[in-house]
Length: 165
Image 1: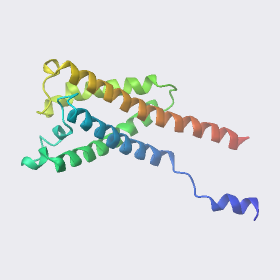
Image 2 (image 1 turned 45 degrees about the vertical axis):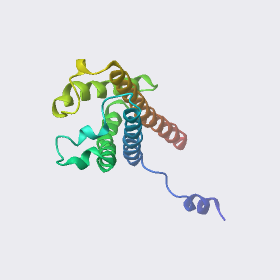
Image 3 (image 1 turned 90 degrees about the horizontal axis):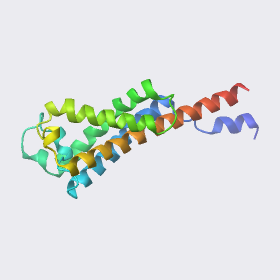
Image 4 (image 1 turned 180 degrees about the vertical axis):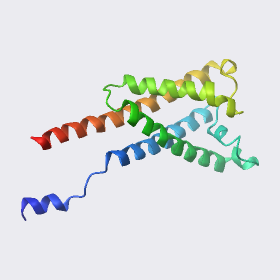
């Protein structure tokens, strides 16, 4: 086998844009599921099901089906968040930008989107456990998205530099 044939036998790596999609989807599903467990264990008063309250009718949204659909919706909503990070912050190294991204998302949800989610009490009426748990979940979500995207960006930059030489 020649070297050229060996190179063509390997599958091409995923594009950066596709990686951002999968990172966002997985991040939303994973951290949404952890948010459900935090709710189930009474660390927070906010169930993932609050995302369905303005749109869905019926009691099914409060059961296991509502929880599964809510977590799937969180995964879907997480994809545009990942693309926003990709577009604005991908070049910045370190965890601090991901941490800041998570805090901005927390503030957006709890102060802006809160107006559209009747299942979330006004911020200053939430329990300290709910606030601390929620901000921690948003921070680790932001770090996950930020670090994953930045790592891939830096890795691609190094590979492009090596290919150029």
